[in-house]
Amino acid sequence: MDQRSEEPSSELLAIDIPAEKSWAIAKSAATGAIVLRFVGPTRTEEIAQFFAALSEMMPEKDAQILFDLRELHGHNPEIKLPATRWLLDHKSRIGQITVVLRRAAALHKLVVAVLSVATGVKMKVRDDLGGESFAPTPP
Image (cartoon, rainbow, N blue to C red):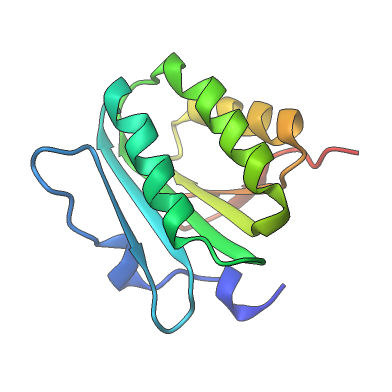
């Protein structure tokens, strides 16, 4: 694993989210890592927007993606199909996905594990940027 997939810079984790959205996206010029930060509940109409923004930022290969879900509240079940479809469509371009969660986010950890198994994309789960756990790696 190269340096890009290690610690995300604190500047990326602090990206501002416009008041009218529940998410923001940024790309590090230094590392190339793409960070999506979510707050509050994710509104269904925003799902296609953030996957489109992520697709535009994706490199041709070895994309390092970090989903910061520490301030996400609740779970929108409408995310399952678009997330699965996006992961399968972009699997060959993904190097590493890291998902940062609050320690108590058991439901979100389960969702990450299910998506990882369903799509065959290895996803690393981090608790509050502290300890690590890993979603199951498909055979």
